[in-house]
Amino acid sequence: MEWFSLNVFLIIADITDSESLIKGLNDKIHKDIKGEIVCFADLGEAYAGLSGKSGDDFGTGEPFITYMNVYQNTYISEIDYEFVQIAPNERQNCVQYGDALFTLSSETPEEVGMGAVYLGNTQKLYLNSFCFGIHIYDERVLPRYLAHFISSTSFRKAIYPLAQGSTRFNLQRNDFMKMRFVLPTTEEQERIAKTFDALHCRLANEMSLVEQCLVLKQYLLSQMFI
Image (cartoon, rainbow, N blue to C red; front, side):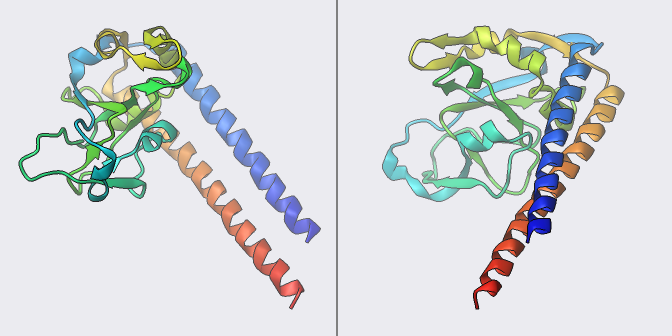
């Protein structure tokens, strides 16, 4: 059993190294990136999450993207939805393929403006009220590239001054939409997105392997006491 635990430890160490590699490479690339100066207001249109809802409206109904789904992911997870009642004639904004989604409010300024990109297109989907989205209409923007760009340190640092508050911080959405950044060519975006997608795929495989090893370990331990 000691050899088994050692192998799990080595895999976990490899995961930590992979996470550091992805973050470091992402920061390096976007620190030195070249391209056109743009802002989100040039590229798309912002929209709000759910409004006018009470606690009784949640639990059943239509799927919506949760705050933690936006906060924790690069791409929105399609197995991590919750549900809300939507009346037949009710006007609420829906999330579309390629939308960039951001946290709007948090207890710390560092957690405001955390973002993920939605790449699904299979159902009508809503967004929680503590986030907002941006419909990206400009074809110069590749959604898969955008997902990695908005997780870079340079982008995160640019957001910090836009978070205002004392006990709870809120992102000033209008200022956010006017914040300027560098957009590389579509060819460069494609190259960067493919690189990071491959790295994230490897990381996901390593994390899945750890989970399988832990399940196997529990099984082997249970067999020892039969």
